[in-house]
Image (cartoon, rainbow, N blue to C red; front, top):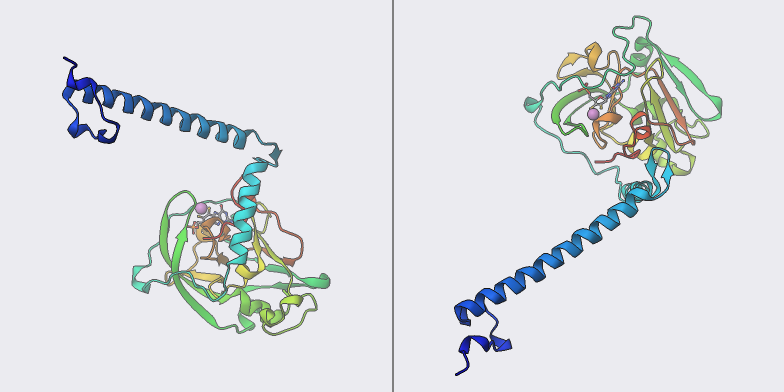
Length: 275
Ligand SMILES: Nc1nc2c(c(=O)[nH]1)N[C@H]1C(S)=C(S)[C@@H](COP(=O)(O)O)O[C@H]1N2
Ligand SMILES: [Mo]
C-alpha cells in the first residue's frame, strides 16, 4: 500500500493538511528556498553597494553619492516654501544646547565688526551699535537646533531676520535695490556665504533659505546675551537646516552668485542640508 504521506496534493500545501514527515520535508524545502532567496537579495544588495561605493570620486565623495545628494538638493529647492515654517515650541520648553563645535571661535572680541558684501562690489562694515542703529524689528523664535550627530535641543533665539537686514541694506539684490528682496526674484543674488572672523568656519546657503522668515542673526539665546562659546556677539540661527549651518561668531557675510564653500560639505556632508 502506498503511504499516504507521499501524496502531497499541490493545492493543499498548507502545513496543517500534511502528515507529519511530509510536513517537515515541505518545511525544509520552503526554508531552503527562503534562505536561497535571502542570499540572492543580500548578494544583489552587496553588488549594488559595491557599484555605489566604486563609482568615480568627485571631491571626497564618489559620483553616485554626489548625484544622490544633488537630487536631494533639487527636490529640496523645488519644494521649498518660504511660508512653510519650522515647528515653533512654547518658550518655556527652551533649553541650553551643549556647546558643539568651536571651529573659528576667538572668544570675546571687543573690536568685532561684521563685514558684508553684495552685488556690484558693494561693501559695508557694521559694528554692533551700527547694526542696532538699522532699527530692524526684533524677532524671537523657539525652534529646534538639530545636529547631524544625532541630538536636538529646543532653543529660544532672538535677533533680527536676515531678510529684514537684506531689505534695509539692499545688499542681497543685484541692483542694490532697497525693500523686500523677494518681491523681485530676478534681481536677487543666488547665495549667501558666511564665515567666522578668521574664515576657519564657513557656511554656504541658498538664498531662499537665507531669507526664510525664521533665519535670524542672533545676539541672544534663551533670554541671555550670547555666550562666547555659542557665538557672541552675533550668530546665525537657521532652523530649516541642520545645526552645522547655524554659524557662530559671524564675521563676514557675502551675497553672491557663486556657490559658496561650506566647511562640513567639504568633509562629505550634504551642502544643502535642508530639514
Ligand atoms: N563658528 C562655528 N560655528 C558653528 C560650529 C563650529 O564649529 N564653529 N558648529 C556648528 C554645529 S555642528 C552645531 S550643531 C551648532 C551648535 O551650536 P551650539 O554650540 O550653540 O549648541 O553650531 C554650528 N556652528
Ligand atoms: Mo552639529
